[in-house]
Image (cartoon, rainbow, N blue to C red; front, side, top):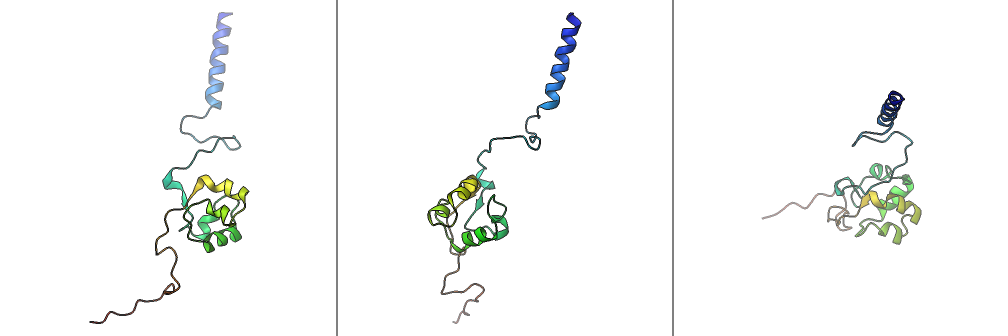
Length: 124
């Protein structure tokens, strides 16, 4: 009877090892998990992201990507919702994946200098 207990214990242990993922390993497909906040370097900046980059966000397609770009610059990411660019549900899906870093002068061309315009030559 003691031998049966040892064999049973080893079988259970082997089963657990084969089912549980190793530390640092990705969970099997279909396994529910809790999304952790992305590190700051992995966040997508809504002031500089391209349309293709924005479309990688859940719930963001061509139309929402265009609206995000057209509404730039943003001083805070929640302006996507407060300015009516995105509905609350879509914003909540992407809030932990985006950031609105301070817009620079290069982020949005000023009306006085159209994009692609060459500066006037310097005279002495």
